[in-house]
Length: 241
Image (cartoon, rainbow, N blue to C red):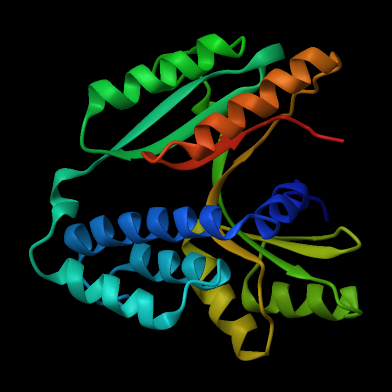
């Protein structure tokens, strides 16, 4: 079975500074707050909240923090001022990029996005311009740690996963979005712990960048996007070495 490796991105996340980790916590908390206000505080009813709790736990957000966020969002709070906005465009060498944001000022965020894409050799597109190249998939990544890949694969498939990949240092398990929570729960009950667990946009085709200058521009574009406070998630189809 095959899938797309996210391990290089995950390694980058694991090496983040305390300040960067705090920013990740803040972004997940904001997303969770809006989710609670839109769909309720019960993860058994609000499947999106259940998925976000899994994502938070995979990013080492303490359970006390998660419960506090949910409790606060159940009352009156500033999260009502935020709205979901998705931007689509192309980076250097035609790499497709999707940016999911939560913003309280569309003009500010749109201006930032346009500036980043223009500065690093890309351009923003219209809604739907690149999203057709991506499919929503659940992704669970765990460190191999000497585990038998055949055993992990069988456990994953028995739990309802649709794909499995042995990447040496990690195993990547892919699910359909509606099966994500079920697969995560069943594998967690078997003692599996994940370094990445989320429903993400997975590209169906990939683009390579051969020119080193263009590689540098793409790296800087992704860095600027991920550092923006309004940006929640960044997806792309750059096939990195």
